Length: 358
Ligand code: SF4
Image (tube, rainbow, N blue to C red; front, side, top):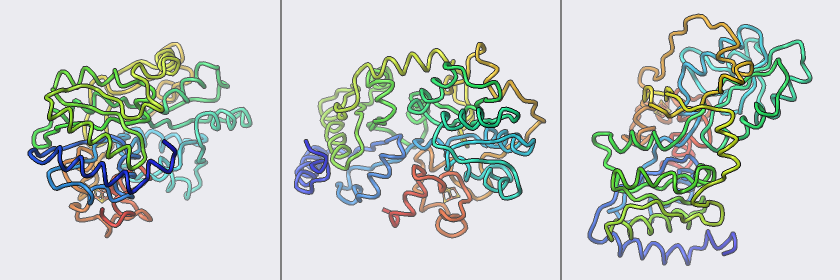
């Protein structure tokens, strides 16, 4: 299929008809855990095409949104200590307990937007007399880009404040959440490209919930829904692959090795969700000289994940639609975000705001 075929309205109509037939006698609550999927769904109005039997729910798929306030507050503390702080643009803007890196920059802190850890390493090389810290938020997709810098051996004045999460444990939390009721998962294409569709098989089998890895074109998402409904109707719960042009069952073994060499799995705090066991990637002790958590002294920090009135934790868990938050579009807008879900292009509130609530 050519790229434009994945947006063909003719194929979309055929898929929607099939989805209608397959869902004629069943309701299905389908959850995705990827900000880019939410962007595709909202910007192409896919919810409006689907029969009312299908509910599409956005789960925790935005790395900035799930970055615990304590991680941002630690970055802010290092900025106030006078170090060069680098991170992705979204991270700079994300509101935390009482400030943001952007606000600290406005007050004079040296906070710089970079495209990735490699850029931060270059800044460290050019500023050998200053400490350069990269605030590394992300999922399995971005972890290899940080792992490669750690393994290569960056300059001594470089370190990473990791806020890296792995997705399958968060999906376990969703499955066990009272009131959410997941019938099927669209698994994230980018993450699946790294960890493979096989990584979701234990979850599918343990909870009898079908999973399908999907790409990011509108027809990818519709086809994934069709595949999920077929599994549901046949009583199967497998981890299938709609995104075969990118994703392999075993994933990217070289990237997985890189992650395993640089990081170890540990319990990690997710914004508003508390600590999820075995859901974070932390720098291995043998690379502790590049671990900002170990390298610097931090005073006790009292962090607040969810500010008064913000319902990001419920949005992240798929419990409410962003429009149900009373601050949506009023006190909280993309220009002046109050909660983390309104910040980046993967944030559910921001996507919903920009798509006019679709
Ligand atoms: S609208 Fe703003 S405050 Fe409300 S849940 Fe979304 S990001 Fe949080």
